[in-house]
Length: 196
Image 1: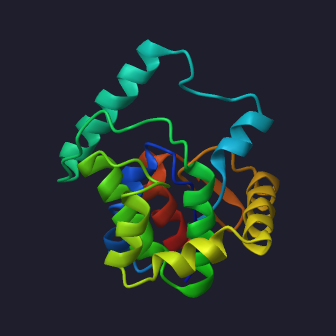
Image 2 (image 1 turned 60 degrees about the vertical axis):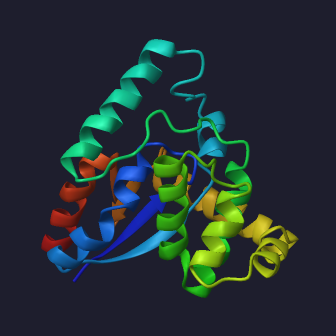
């Protein structure tokens, strides 16, 4: 069975859709997956690819598109969610620590739910400490460790790894070197993983 790497960055709006449904879809497909949190903002700046900055028509389309897709998945976000996120980097440093310690999936789901369903920006209070408390983590411990030089370096390293694989946005799914970009490619990536 192939493993799928789920390249995800808190701060990516479309990642909400994938974060909230990948677990059930991967289980149904018989595919294992690994959370790979990274800093998508760094990638987009490096590649001069800022998709919604100063683009009000495209931004309006994005929110309506997410709203339509979410309804089809049985999700009911409050659109628009706060965007962009001032705390993107910290949110993803916490995710990197969560990936090391085994609670990243729960953290991602709690964070995105608060961000999209309750309008609480990810990466800051009350979302960040409340999400950590909800999943049984001590916010003081996690935030201290997540802001350490070690975790800052780990986020930078994994972001470089993402770019080396050809990941240019989030969500992305990588199976054996094949890159699938966008929530609408999640099913394709799972199918590919199941066949290869």
